[in-house]
Image (tube, rainbow, N blue to C red; front, side, top):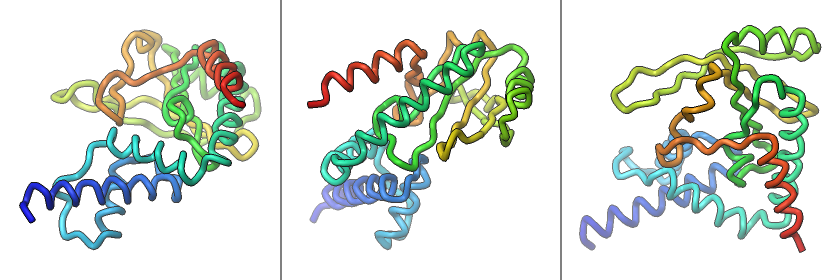
Length: 207
């Protein structure tokens, strides 16, 4: 067995195991899933890891094989919840990002939104005025390979039993999406109107 074939087999095993971990354990962080996969497979090091987009494709395939009876339902419910929350936060120009947008979310996924406001405290005051319990922190985002991470305020709250996490960018941030954790390209974002259209289109395609 050549080293190249052995590395390729190892890479596929890690990718498949990481994908299964992400689905079964509701993990959305790719690096965490890779580390767990390496440990679970009894491998000795973190070398030759699969790309995130390789794992994402296997997540989709795993859901189609083993969650086809439930995952579409949970995805629809999460998108409906996202629409309601985006309407509530309309003053902050919300954009949906992450697994609820790309279609890999399931029952235990959180909804991720980007908000845009030059005074981030306005988001906090909005939550306080509306009696919404929340946790606050920072999300560090690196926009360039050689740039330093920039800290943006983030807030986490629940609607019913669904976790919502919002990251607050300045209004000019509407023109520059952060890099996607999947492929490093500008992250896909969707406006309220786009999410409504996405849900309507999915319903039309449902037999």
